Amino acid sequence: MLSFEESMQIIQNLSVQPVGVEKRYLPDALNRVLAEEIVAKENSPEHPTAAMDGYAIIGADQAKGVIDVLHDNAAGTDVAGMKVRPGTAIKTFTGSLMPEGADTLIPVENVTFEAGKIRIDEPVPEGFSVRPVGENYREGETLIPKGATLGFAEIGVMASLNMVAPLLYQRPRVAVLATGSEVLELGVCSDNPAQIRSSNNYTLEALIKRHGGEAVQLGAVHDDRAAITEAMRQGLESADILVTTGGVSVGDYDFVKDVVRDELGCEVHFKGVLIKPGQHIMVAQKGNRFIVALPGFAYSSTVTFLLYVLPILYRLKGQAYTPPVVSARLLDGYRKKTANKTEFAACNLWLEKGEYLCDFSGKRSGTSAIMTNLLGEAGLLWLDADDGDKKAGEHVRVIPLR
Image (cartoon, rainbow, N blue to C red; front, side):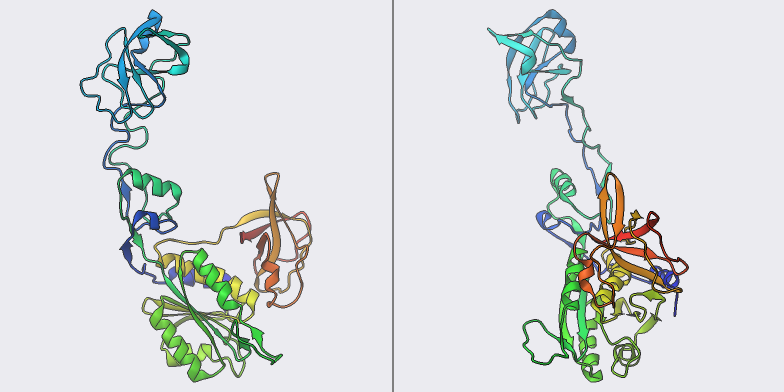
């Protein structure tokens, strides 16, 4: 088996091309990945602009104490022909262009208006409350880089640039197939106590959606080589990544690994990694389509999905991905389960007074089937293969899951 580090290096070296691009209406671009640079085509603002309601004046005129008011300058008014001369002011409102000659906006709160004049009650510095040309951005400035995930701020900036339909990377399609004669689909009734309810499909679908992919549910298929072959062939045809759960171990009915090699003709990058959980993971490729075969236990499939599927999914949508890692102080001791494997253990993780803390309160000890250990503010304690037991008070690496 490969070491965890070796398997990550192979994942990093995979030839992965983004699935494609498309233009989408701006309000539909939230949380999508940008496939072009957004460059300002003009200054913003293009003209000095009032930042408050007040009077456009020559700042030095405040020393006169009283200034004549000529007229109003409402927002949206063309100021061509308007001019502030020494000793005069034009009432100007938030967002209005500053009239020619004015260099300062004195707020209405700082003056008293009477009989067509303002009395300066509280002077302001010259240039006060005037937005200069290019305050927001300047022509030719790159505002949003290619590959950025679009949030509310990016949407707002693009709207200010009058971008109706930005160019986006398409969402990768990720098909999910559960294998195993013991797996029972949601909604199906059974009186067979040997069957278990399918949950992996829906856990992984939620993760796919959370990370910007489009999930394709293929349901569950029994441990039959022909049925698994047909389901996996359909998955490869309909998606950019096919994720399977179960059937990758060494049992008599574990057909997935053989189907990938013998029936689908995929290039197997590796099968088996020295990690806990999920050592029987398999990653294969056919063209620009990928198969990631995960273990069947719920906790194992979830952890290995985070480690091995997400880096491929992100690259298919034009981004890089590395697991987020924080340093946390361990409040409990932790006994490492294996001596030669990289280990990922579910823990509680929270921030307190600026410090991350973690413990194992309420976490159940047992097999890799315990999905409830990922409920709440959970994280994954990350121990390298050569790490030993950890004592209370030590700082450890944790992958936050929330």
